[in-house]
Amino acid sequence: MEYEKLVSQALQARKNAYAPYSNFKVGAAVLTNDGKIFTGCNIENASYGATNCAERTAIFKAVSEGYTTIKAIAIVGVQNDYTYPCGICRQVIAEFATDDTKIILGKNDTEYLVKTLDEILPGAFTKKDLGK
Ligand code: THU
Image (cartoon, rainbow, N blue to C red; front, side, top):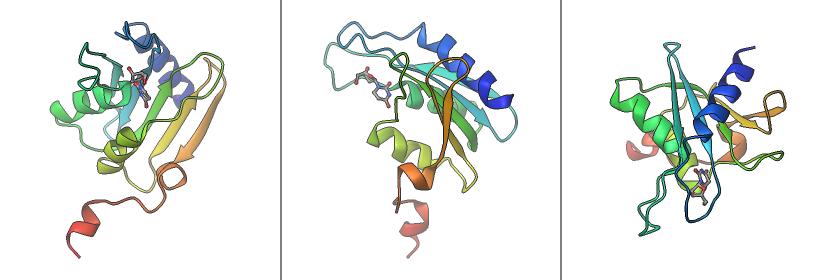
């Protein structure tokens, strides 16, 4: 199953999380419309504010390689529960999402929730608003 594969890649990426301050490890895996997968982990910083979330690491890797449409993104944080993306990450997902983009919240290898962006960021401000 495509989603399970994405969750397991996010779990794998979580192992590289650099989280010496919070000890809260997060992994993410982005599936682009072209079928490519980019993974990411959270990368903390002594300044705290320069910390980058796992979702943004994965998305920025994809975009910097020329892949700008997210088909699905899996996120795995705290073990044995679901970790939702933070507000900034929801906004960044919105930038590269379509109405069909799936946000997969992984609990473990086999248990996950599938959400749409509209469910987790209703009324999102997007590039469509800028033209108004
Ligand atoms: N974190 C993520 O990587 N993604 C989220 O959506 C929530 C928060 C990270 C940032 C920080 O390194 C740690 O989790 C605690 O906030």
